[in-house]
Length: 106
Image (cartoon, rainbow, N blue to C red; front, side):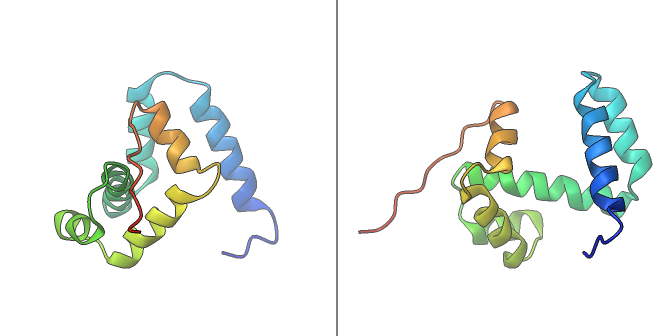
């Protein structure tokens, strides 16, 4: 997405700061359901679920079948999780999840 005006970056940063400033999970959930359509909320929830399943070491094809998502979305999630200083990994750890490291075939 092209954000020449800075509108997207500014507003995402602002919302992130506000969300980080509260420990009221119910308020945040209500806010998200108000902000997103049902379809958007479903998509976001499925993407979080796929990141958790990848972290558990579940094969990508099994995740696709379980969540009804494309392999492309799952591959993207997997790539993001593998990045150095991955925000996915940090958020999972904040949530109390452990990331299972897959062993590479020799």
